[in-house]
Length: 408
Image (cartoon, rainbow, N blue to C red; front, side, top):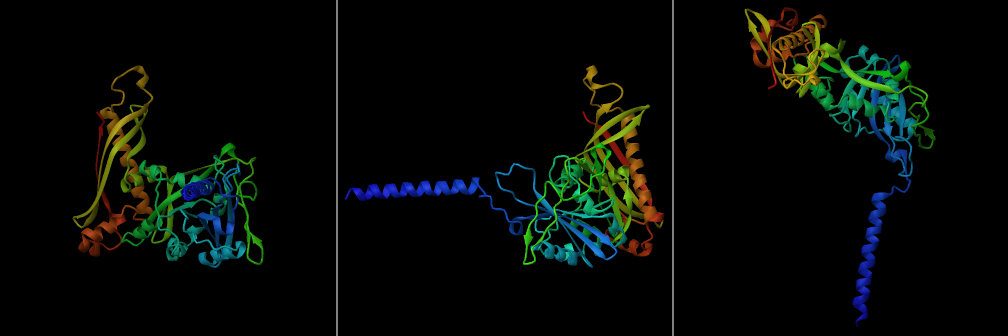
């Protein structure tokens, strides 16, 4: 009778050991099984307009076995069609798997998309149930396919580097006009009918040009009875690495391309339309260059009508500290080196006003209501909105209330 309890204890112990071993194998080994048809994840999509319709390039991350010590594996596939949806279906025909785009975080529009209405180009992404509305939208010079084919300096996927260039941190520092599909539709459907998005540029180290090609850092897979395979995306190591930046901004009015804001105009737009934690601005005071950090930023826009003319009132507040200066460096031992003199504060406020003026000039010249003047009139002064019509920007007056104080 005593043997049975001992056997039960041994069985329980063996069961526990077996479960522990299975859990260890489950969490520490992928068994080398990689199937592109089931495991590849589309993380970025590029759209280009062609004479025959659209080219859609999908960049997919491909999970690799744990024993593989190579770089990040990915594949790039390009489909063509009369519409974006037709081009995505062409990807399905070439690879054997249909990209559902559930994990697509980036949509890049090539320069050729400026020929079409922006919402016609993006229509597929709003209709597709799998595409997240939080996906970031951007535009680039040249081809979106070529941009996604560039190799970043860290050797990974271009999609990851582009996403870092449009990160929330850069938006909060007024360096990127980050926007997603949802916000883009909201702004485009407002009475202002103006939208903006980051304009990506890629600089190649060494002054060369980075172009997409099949080769290292890519994977391919075949599917379907036809046995077609996906093309790989990547670069050879001899080519220069690309650095992606989004310091400029593409603007659209009523869905049509209006132009590209330069860095100063984009900075002013971000300062007024985003929640900024820390912005850095260069200014000149007394013939010396100062780099000033702006904290506790707050901006408020209000539209009124005075004597029959629309007036945009811009209120901006911030705390400033000197981050770098050509004169009086902090190394000299001054305890108050971070404080900002009244002269530098005045110069900084003037610099910000000049950048906002340049932004408003762009809006007037291109009939692009990026600051939402028509929207504010419609929401808060409806009768004035009806009487003024849509020709508001040419007669718009601007009043500034910019106050910047030094940190203590």
